[in-house]
Image 1 (cartoon, rainbow, N blue to C red):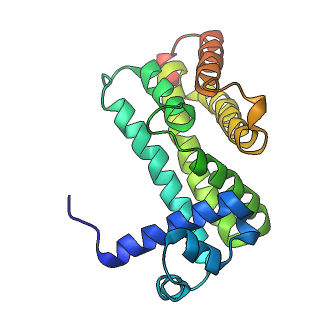
Image 2: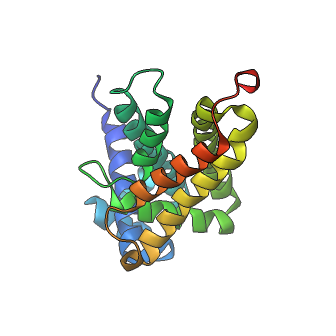
Amino acid sequence: MPRPSNTEARREQIVAGLLKAMAERGYEGASVAEIARAANLSAGLVHYHFKDKQEILLTLVGSLASRARQRFATRTSRLAADDARGRLDAFVDAFLATGPDSDVAAVSGWVTISAEAIRQPEVRVAYEAVVRADLEQLESLVAAVVGKRRARPLAAGLFAAIQGYFVLSASAPGLVPPGSAAGTVKRMAAGLLDAAGPLVRDDA
C-alpha cells in the first residue's frame, strides 16, 4: 500500500484533531485554534489544508464511516460467503462491539455529527448519505436471511437500535452496561429474524 502524501497525512492529522477537540469541548467550542492544538499543528496549517471548520467536519463524516466499514470488512473476511447470520452479526459488531478496534471518541464524534446535521444543511447531506448507505447494507444483510419483502422494517429497527446505543453511550455512558450493546442488538436481531421466518425464495 502506498504511503499517504504529506498533504493527506496533514489532513488526517487535522481531522483527528477536530475529533479530539469535539470530545473535549463540543463542536461549537472546537475552534480552529483548539483543533490545531489537538493536532499539534499551527492554526495556519489548519487554514492551509481546510477552508473552514465545517470542511473539516464534513471530512470527518467520511473518515468515521470508513472506519466502521473497515471493521465490518475485517470481520467478514473470516466468514464463509454464505454465512448470512454471521455477516449480520459482523455488521452489529463493527458498529457496537468493544475490543481492540473499538473507538469511544468516534462514537461520541458521530453523535455530535448527527446533532450538527440538524443545524447545518451541508452536514445533513453528508450524514444522510452515510446513514443511507449503511442502512442499505444492513437491509441487504437482513434480506439474505428473511427475503427482501420483510427486510426493510427489520433493518430499520436494528439500525435505530444501533444509533440509539451511540447516543446513550456518548451522552449517558453509565446507563449502558459495559460491553453489552453488541450482544443485546444481536439477540434482538436473532429474535426478529426468527419471528419473521425463513427466507422465502421467490421474494429474494
